[in-house]
Structure formats: C-alpha cells, structure tokens
Length: 93
Image (cartoon, rainbow, N blue to C red):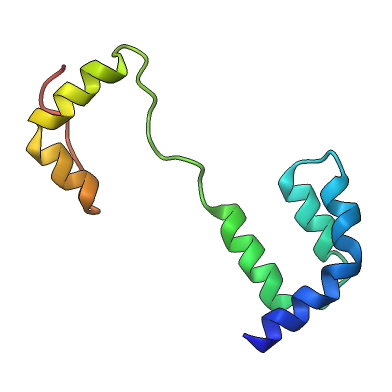
C-alpha cells in the first residue's frame, strides 16, 4: 500500500493540469501516467478503465412502472439479480 501511495505522490504535480483539461478520462489517465515509473497505479487505472459501463441491453418498450410490476412477480429474475446467475426470459411483459 505504501508503494501505491508513493506512486500517487509522483503524479501530484501534474494532477491539477490534467484534471482541468477537456479530454476523455482515458486520455487524462494516459497523460497523467505517461513518463512516470508508476506500475501499481498504472495497473489500477488499467483495470478500472477496462470495466464495461454496462452489459445490459436497453429496453425502450416498457415504462419503469410496467417493468417494476413485472420484476416483482418474477422471483427467478429477482434471485438472478441478487446473484451472478444468468436469467433467461421465458415470457414477455
């Protein structure tokens, strides 16, 4: 943990300039870490930036109220949402 903090301190002088730029987050991290010896901080940033924003399909056909009512009735859906199980849709709303 001390190593990660030391690497964070290496980036401190550049942080304010990078934060104020109007650039995508990936470019900001790249600029911040470029030319530094910060393998742990680079690994953390790389991991966080590799997480997909979502893996869910978007459904525009149903209102929130309709889906809420459906979800309350579907015990298998609620159980899958609480766990890492896959849920297969068997019927439409």
